[in-house]
Image 1: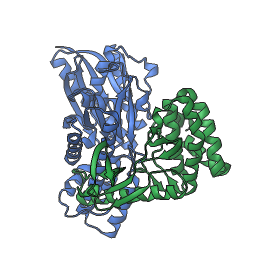
Image 2 (image 1 turned 135 degrees about the vertical axis):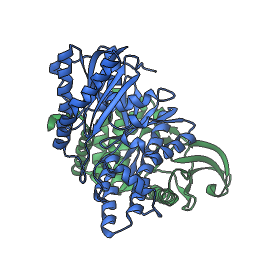
Image 3 (image 1 turned 180 degrees about the horizontal axis):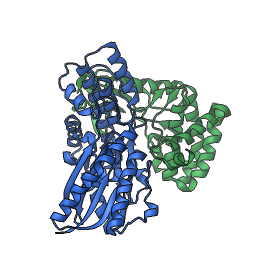
Image 4 (image 1 turned 45 degrees about the vertical axis):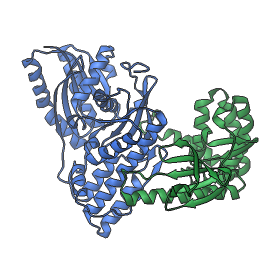
Length: 219
Length: 332
């Protein structure tokens, strides 16, 4: 298949809504291939535009994250035409499967890593626990598929809110500790002024939904 | 001859009256919609429209009830969310009927009614719902006794996008059907912004771009096609994400925009790819109507969720997550 760069597919790891993730054999080493399938329901012009734009953007985001010193899978090859990215395979444990005590030991690094990304104008877009991998005690960020290049407080806050929201939903018992640690270490990188701006915006975002009660009381 | 609930709908442009039996059969459904030659809905004028048409519509419903010797057991009304002045007309009518006939009054959440009336016609009875109308764009799932919004618009609704485009093209309200018709005659796709963020969508950038292109003088048919195609693709993609996320087996489409054939076509393709069912609400129950209010009213009646008159004030803002769903079990 051209969309797999002619490489042998070992297995299909994920059949997602947007892309298929394959484990492939890259000259004797395992590698990941992310392929954005064409959507039959979309106009072809629009479909091609969306898939190639997102593929290029994602590859750039990953590369820039690596250059900023954040662990992310190294990009090995990109095909704009076939909307696929070949990247390093990270062997490790998904943060979803890490128990509460262990999770707490990783939160400071995760917070400063997100801070470093933001400081370098990179917004991950979906930093939930499922997209963070622990490999040899190092933290890797994967799936920049919803990310963008931005220094905007709003975009940063959406990122932070996503991480905190998932922690709050899945680990309610330790959420207080997570929040405190996150703030401390995120602020260390971004500085208290910008850090505070982002956290303030997180509060606003939570109030923004349609027909939210807090908003009604405010009006 | 059966026990029935009367339902009144008046959240926005439509005043509707419906009758539903306690078994959930829809027996009567009549409505009248406020239209304009140009421009959108003016809340006060819409309310005046409802005031004018409500008496004769309600009269027709009672005539039907009497002729068929049905027994009125409760009156249900759209308590929100919606335009305050419009909601109040339905509220006043419902209170009057409740007091005159000595039957309980029941407040129905308008969004829940759109979702439930579509679920009635679904295959699995536990679908995710794409709810698209003039005021709403939301992808809704049922989880632990509540409906939860898993994806929604971050700014304007898709119906609002199409209505404003229609207005700019010189059509009155409702103009969306005319935009959809015009789109069918297009010859090419224009480059307009596409914005899906996770399961959420943003339509305001698309509207701004469309208005700019219109000023430049592009072909209105091509513009309509490009906006419709882009907006519906966004809905399809966000819905696909929610379908995969929840692992549910069915998507159902409801709300006024559910009548758009192209949207149904796209969602059908999405469902096919994920080996799921696709259903769409019958077109006479897609837009705002009284039957869906009567239908949810009949379920609330069975759970004895009556309001006292003092509690029957309208809620122009009423989030769907705040509504208890007593008629659905944890795992339906």
